[in-house]
View 1 (tube, rainbow, N blue to C red):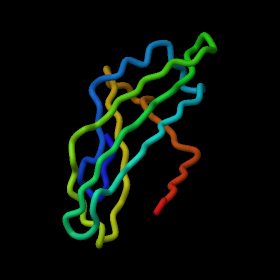
View 2: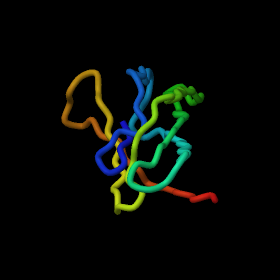
View 3: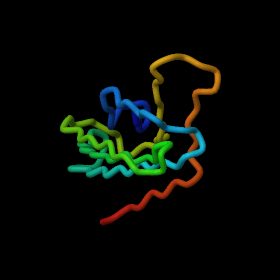
Length: 105
């Protein structure tokens, strides 16, 4: 789940990441479109997720969100991401080593 200021702006159903190893890279690409700005701004999003499998080949998981989120663009907001695992283990983590946010007018 991706949230902006505590409001969910993108989520997906369960994605089975078969044959993934913790040392293999992954990429999440998100696109957000604000249809309006202000205290009740309308936002749409879509995303693509790609990762390397343990066999050395890529697999693609993509999804699209058609739901609108209402965001207060006049406030300072934190961007957060969460993940849920099929089974709880102490070493279940995901690490972000690079993050790029581009604003286009």
